Length: 509
Image (cartoon, rainbow, N blue to C red; front, side, top):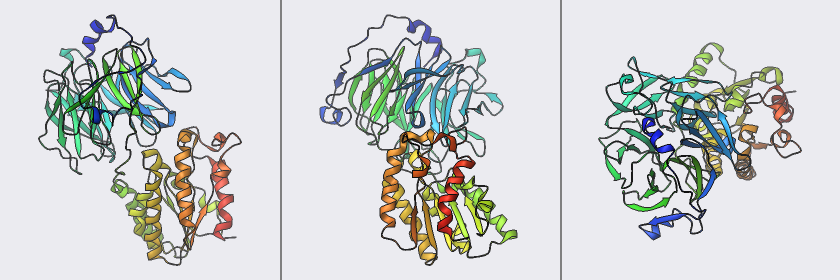
């Protein structure tokens, strides 16, 4: 939203509607697929200056959003209500989340896209293009390959501060630090989103056009020429989201407008204050959160599909090649124990000391999913001809949004691939654990564990090793003292628990 225009709008009298939602329905049958018949619009919090940029944050079990003029990020949770998440925010606007518990934010006054790491530190991802300062990054999304896409209109700066020749849509590659202007023919690019399968990119133009355009996006992130998807009849499009069925939800002056996958208006959720942005949230993504002028609203919606496409496993090619380089001069002997999986394995630096009578080899690679271990199994497991394989993966999958069934299917694929190549090797699967920062995912984690445990019951040479039970305290929550300050990774006390549980399975003593 244009900051220069905010001040004339913020203090206009605003009528607060009753709790019952009011709708403008254009297609009753399709509208009811989006909004339950008994849905009510609820005002969760008010009294702010101008709200924007909501994002549901799983590890906080709440929605983080911006109050731009107040220079802060707010957090709302069902248990604690409204609180300050970060101040100053540098007049933050759009927010999203990325891998490894990162909050990514568009900041107006610093003219940058910043990232908050898991330990709370904040640093710049990108703030310039071809030697010139960005305008004022506005809205941001992250694709499953890790690339960060954002819009850069001049709403947060004065006209004489602009250094770029236009208002662009950018793609930033965190690993290479490369910034590419992927769309340069917009007036005022604003909200943006991908379709669930990431084959389409939608971008709102809140300038004179007041429409949303759609672009086909291939696996290499190349966009076609695009076309107009729909026009907004009241005000302008700002924040937009695509649901699991391909419908587009856009803010407008009169509320939230919902469009079919082909661009027809299905109906509107009328909101008493003109909304600026929106997001799906809740464990099942069955709540729509709406930032509207001075307030935060919510309404129940149909649950959204999540995590349809896992990240591209080739993002770990550098790490796998590093293993192969090490092997050329260290040639592990066959018949040992290979540990493989995500960062909890990679960070297990005391493996050799913990299992002194075993020939152990650590082949964990951080942030990985079960599917990544399947993809690289030939290069990180099979080539070593181990007698035992210890696998820990699945937590990142659940956090990413993959279903327990998808996790279980990837486990089956791993067992099939390794078991076919190494029919006599034993596979030990360490149950998925839930750290304090992901405690709200416990039910989905346990469902995945149950599915995998049931699958293992019918397999030979595969065992389910329960580590979760010993990591849960009397209150039913993860023991905080076995985790590092980031509340995600284990500390030595946590690894000591794993060691004591796993030692009898390895038969090394």
